[in-house]
Amino acid sequence: MTSLPNPMSFESQRLVRQRLLELAGLLAPNEGYNPTGLPGLRILRTETVLHDVPVLYKPGAVFVLQGRKQGILEGDAYLYDEEHYLSVSVPVPFRMESVASVDRPLLAIYVEFDMPLAAEIASLIEKRSSGTSVSKARSLVSSKMGPDILDVLLRLLKALIDPVETAVLGKSILRELHYRVLVGPQGGAMISALQQRGTLGKIVQSLARLRETYRSDVSVAALASDAGMSIPSYHAHFKALTGSSPMQYVKAMRLHEARLMIARQDMAIAEVALSVGYVSPAQFSRDFKRHFRRTASEEARWVRQHLGALAFGA
Image (cartoon, rainbow, N blue to C red; front, top):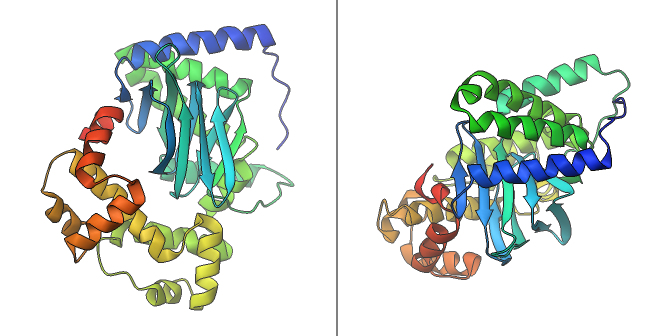
């Protein structure tokens, strides 16, 4: 899809970025994830440098206003910093590092996609776009943060400052942000994942089912059968999209869910292990330490310190 050039000058962009930082600072006064008046939208503030941290993002986008993050998946690096944003079309476990300091904290906007809304917008784009090429579905994509994105982010943060504007304008601006991402440089790859067509579409559907059933016994043979594939073919296509084998993916989902449950101190560690699908608490503890490189109790303290409201279900 072609678009008209945006007339925002370099100086205008600089001023927009400066204003975005001011607003984000007001909306995110606390270390970690700060909730906003819109569901699925949080603002991260952190002064901590992170190295090789395992993460599992839900489908959405991350816009870094100050600082730098980088994700590593299967040896590929995905930069999201003051010039680039990251979009996630399917939840995938990857490793992350970030740059921040006390004098220059990392500030980032995290938007979790409203999947029915994103699918609706993707369908409208496809119906009304002539000659749009079909892109290969990809789980992670990093793109340049252009003037259109900066403009909608500024209007979104302005609306979040005022509860009345949030209630009246918030959802419509958030809808526009979904649209801007889907018509951006990475839009084709994201639309392909959202449309769930072909072989990779079957893998996307399989991931959605796993999200609902990961606590139960998982059979790769059953997953492959549901997708209409042989087990070797299912393995190959699954790894191509997620960077993990099906069972590695399930393990990551269980461990990341357990991590938040432990941080919220809802249950004892052994109870958490059983609730996310582990039969053996001892095996859970071994897998947890191997994945996060800390014991469950150590990781719980780290999450409460660095993730803020997210650690408590906000």
